[in-house]
Length: 400
Ligand code: PMP
Image 1 (cartoon, rainbow, N blue to C red):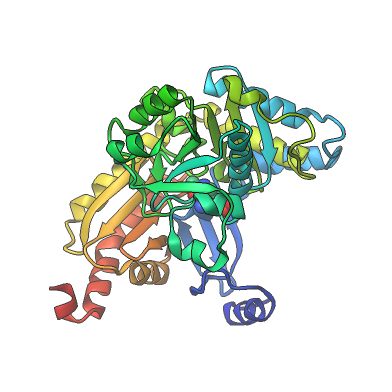
Image 2 (tube, protein in one colour):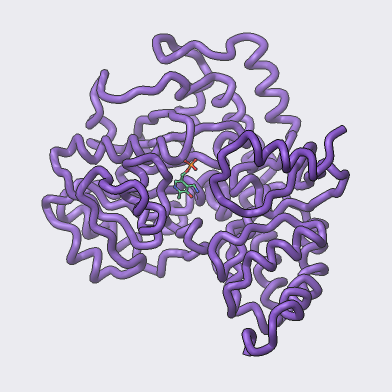
């Protein structure tokens, strides 16, 4: 049996460290619970960063994956297998209008495909938002509005204008008849769980329609039930030209999906784009199990109810360190008065809760959609002490 210290040391010697933050070595789990190598159990409010929609080791996913891999694990895109066809049909059905799906293996790849669809309009200019996150591959990174992540890799492809997230005026000024696409997250996830202001996405739809520009909604983080709707934009009644999905769709297995509607669905022609693993039948079988389980177990309502309980519960603590809670469904950001999110993450971990300091002043909660009342009660009961411990460890003058 390995220990936390041993696994951490082996990890440090063999893997490139992409975040530079301490990590808990997890060795087993079930539902919204994980166990580390020293045997400590955690309640999971990270969900693999909004990935483990059904938690870990959900029987429906285990069964779907086992069944599929026992027959056809992979065929390549030279052939057809049934799971990607069924998954595409199911996604289109949930989206409620005709469209076509391109499967890949991650959020960044889903965005790369959208980028290429944009290029196929014959226009090159693109508009994205400051603070937005769309992935780390070069095209996705060009759209990502976080200079620190872009700087080491310039020059980036494309002619991208970043506009302040939420400003309709800025969008109106930036988008012209030369603009191929506008890409927006319904809630900026990585940037601290910042929801689009009321009316912003509707205005983006109106502006892009007037200029013949594609509206791409990046639902990699907000899609697949995370906000209590199948897809976040459905709550707003707008129809984008392209949406990108990943994260929760595969229930823990790697998948990306780019779904294009109307004329956008025909912009990429055969031979222009492709990937070996996209549409892998095992991953698609897992994704179908995720969608079926969300529907069968009424998880959208569950997400709305528990998300609201969590939000109200955290606000009701009234801790002086907490300024507010924002987000939707089970994608919530606890916004702090000070940049102490890493300390809160650490203290929560000590207390047996996994949470994520996504930006210095915001703690992100993105638990599995199957998180229970008991898990939420436990976190709400523990949070006052967690926050107090963080405050106690900070010099009083820093708190003011
Ligand atoms: N778009 C959004 C909105 C995301 O949140 C992320 C991942 N955090 C990505 C794209 C990139 O996804 P991946 O890490 O799977 O490449």
